[in-house]
Amino acid sequence: MGLDGMNKLEEIIRLERVGLKAGLGDSSLLRDISFKVFRGDRLSLIGQSGAGKTSLLRLLNRLSEASQGAIFFKNQDIRRIPIISLRQQITLVQQESKLLGMTVRQALAYPLELRGISKPAIEQRMSHCVEQMHIPQDWLERIEAQLSVGQRQWVAIARALMIQPQVLLLDEPTSALDAGRADYLLKVLIELSQTQQTTIFMVNHQLNLAQQFCDRVLHLQQGRLLQDLPSTQMNWAELQENLIQAETQESQEWE
Image 1 (cartoon, rainbow, N blue to C red):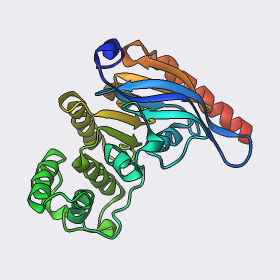
Image 2 (cartoon, rainbow, N blue to C red):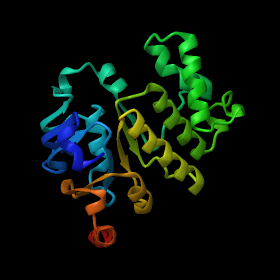
Image 3 (tube, rainbow, N blue to C red):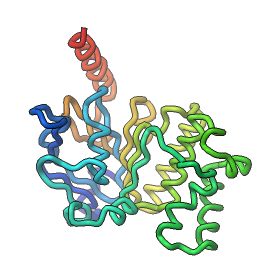
Image 4 (cartoon, rainbow, N blue to C red):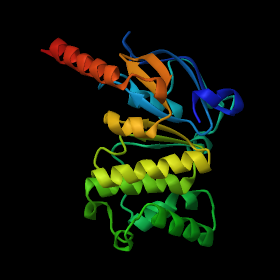
């Protein structure tokens, strides 16, 4: 469910006039961002390169800290939530994730071992995850160097699903996947939002995939939230044209 059912859903994240400075200067990566998110929402973050999409994801689990405004998770200021606890509940899968020298099996188990979950429970959850994500058994003993970029991306997403976060943040999760795996991933994510009410943010430059996935669109431009609309109300052709124009303008400014 998206905007149409907001009054019936539990608010899970709220941003109030959030900004993020680019450094010590006056330039900003994000400016005056405000919106609410509810359990089970599937949000696509859309915008040209440099619009602030990844910066916004990083703020939500405190890989970066807002320069102004406030972010709330279940009505609690995220600055008051211990970092480890927050990231167990709001999990980010970056575009390029590392396995830290572990095998795939070790990497999948590691976040749960840190939480003190029993080995039998980890094995049970891993078995489900491996089946759900169609991970071949021969991958489990491979290390990062033995995996392709797309395979590493797939494992990183599976590792996040093992955590079972309440909010899942995905930065270009389909960038290195073939069309078949990308489509299957969308099906898994949609089912996750519907059956477990997981809230999912996805950055994706492929508008056709974004449109299939989301029930809500956050359109960022030059660090500002330009549009916040249900997917069914978004003019996707106009959005595509807007992105092309923004990218063209930016490239001309660099020349």
